[in-house]
Amino acid sequence: MTLRLRLTLVATAVVAVVVTAASLTTYFVMRHELYKQVDGQLAAHAQDPHGVYPGFSPYSADSVAVVAPDGSEIGRPIPIDARIKQVANGQRAAFFRNARAETARGPIELREIVVPAQGGGAIIVARSIDYIHHDLERLRFILILVALGALAAAALLAALASRATLSPVLRLTAAAERIARTRDPSERVDESGGGELQRLGGAFNTMLGALEESLETQRRFVADASHELRTPLTSMQTNIEVLKQQERLAPAQRAQLFGDLEREAHEMRDLITGLLELARGDANLERRPVQLDELVESAVERARARFPDVRWEDELEPTSVAAVPERVERAVWNLLENAGKWNTNGDPVEVRLADGELSVRDHGPGIAAEDRERIFDRFYRATSARSLPGSGLGLAIVREVAEAHGGTVVAEEAPGGGALLRLRLPKS
Image 1 (cartoon, helix red, strand yellow):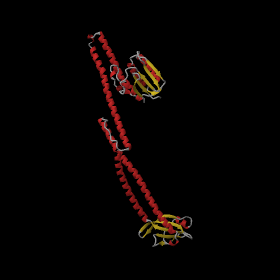
Image 2 (cartoon, helix red, strand yellow):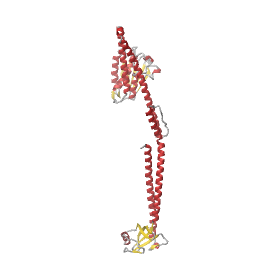
Image 3 (cartoon, one colour):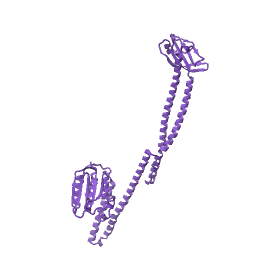
C-alpha cells in the first residue's frame, strides 16, 4: 500500500468518524426535542381540567382515558398495566410511556402521560406520534445521504491533498532512484513547497552536495595516491633493471643503487602508512583521557634521537585531553618531524604546550603565503619542499586528527622567520 493511499484512507476514516458522530448526535438531539415537545403539550393538557374528558376530541390531536381508583377503565378501552393501577391508587407519580393502539385505519404509535386524577383514579392523555417516526425516518435518510456525500468528498479531497503534499517527496524519491541508477550525485531537487518539505529538499540537496564532494575527494585521493606511488615504483623498477647487469657495474655504483633502493623502499613504506592512516579515520577507536604533555614529551625525546643535529627546546604545561592516543601521537610526531627537516641552521625548534594548544616553531625558511592554506592538503608539497624526502601526507594527517577530535591546526609565519604551527585540541 502506497503512502498516498494510506494518507487518503486515514483522512477518510477521520472524516467518517466525525460525520458519524455528528449525524448520531443530530439524530438523537432531534428525537429528544420532538419527544420533549410532545411531552410538554401532553403534560399541559393533563393539568387542564376543562380539556380532560373520555374519548377522542374532534378539536384536539389528543385522546383522554380515565381510570377508576380500583384500576378499571372508564370510557375508551385501554390496556391497564400495574404501573397505571399504582398511579390510580396513589402509589406512583405521573409518568410517560409509548403505546400502540388499534384504529380503523390500522395500528398507530401513541405517546401517553399517566397522571393522578383529583379525588382518586388516573387520567391518561395520549397523542399519535406516527408523524415523529416519519420525521425521524426522513432525518435518518437525509443524514445517511449527507454522510455518504461527505465521505466521498473527503476521499476526493484527501487524495488531491495527499498528491499535492507528497509531490515533493515523490520528486525526492525519483531523484534518489536516478542517482542510484546513474551514480551521479550532481543532480539537485526543487526546494519549493515551504515548511518541512522545503527543509527536507534542502537537507537532501545538502546531502547530495556532501556526497558529491566526498566522491570527488575520493577520486582525487585515488588519483594522487596512484601518482605518488607510481614515482617510487618506477624508480625502483629502473634500479632493479640496472642491477640485473650488476657484473658490468663498479662496486661504488652497485652500492649507490642499493642505497637508492633502500631509500625508495622507505618512501614507499611511509607513503603506504600515511595512506592507511588517512583511510582509517577515527572509526571504532575509543577516546579516553590522555595527558598531552606526557605524550608530547615522549615525542620530543624521539625527535632528539631522530634529528641529533637539531636543538629541541620544550615548555610543556600539564594538559589532559579526550583523544585517541595513537592518533594524537602520530599528529604530534608529524609536526615535530616537519620542523626537524626544515631546521638546519643550528637554531632551536621551540615546542610549547599551554591552554590545550601545542605550538611548534622552527627557524627554517618559513612557509610562503600562497602555500599556508594548502600545506594541509593531501599530497601537496611546496616548491621548496620537493627536493626533500616525504610524501606530502604528514600535515594532512595532522589536520585529519585535529578535525576528528574537534580541534584545529593552523600554519603561521613565525616572528623573525621560520614557521609556526599550532595544534589545538579540546580539553577533557
